Image 1: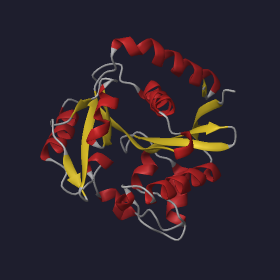
Image 2 (image 1 turned 180 degrees about the horizontal axis):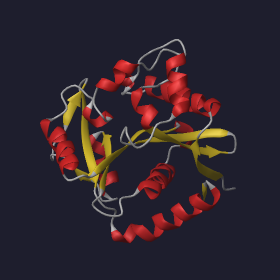
Image 3 (image 1 turned 45 degrees about the horizontal axis):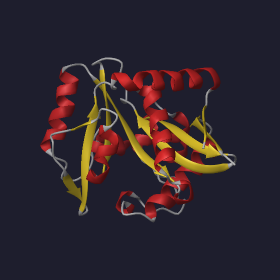
Length: 230
């Protein structure tokens, strides 16, 4: 019997808190645990969440996966996250003085990444970053991971050279993103807490994927959801 998976945007504070807790618990048990600021609320939250849209993948009432998409600070602000973060002491005004995106915030990030970002600004290209992608182990399969990622790209895919989509990942996962047209920034990897990392950019989605992404975006615009039977 097939399951129905539903991709949707997370908008309400209670649901946001549920997925920020899921992020916390998932990352704390992973090789990326150093990204987590441990706290009594068990919420993974930082300043980038304020400038993000947050997306959930559900199967019935079960949380299956999550991904956030980070926008330029002047373009979008998630007030629910800001209020929650300030209330729990997890977000403060000083956080806004740091790097504009996660891929630029890590210690030891290559100069080529900042060069890429500054060149994007010079060309008046906006940057958005997909981040914190998780799928729970009991649901983890290439088809489910692809569906979650493709839904996010379908809603925010570049139509021209007006902006770039960014992802930061383990180098072993680069081929997954390169299938969608992503290219390595600076053609190099680096290490964060002894874990190899790479950043990739997508200036424009490959033509062969556009019909699929357009269909997914239309479904979302009409229903506020994208469904998969699997």
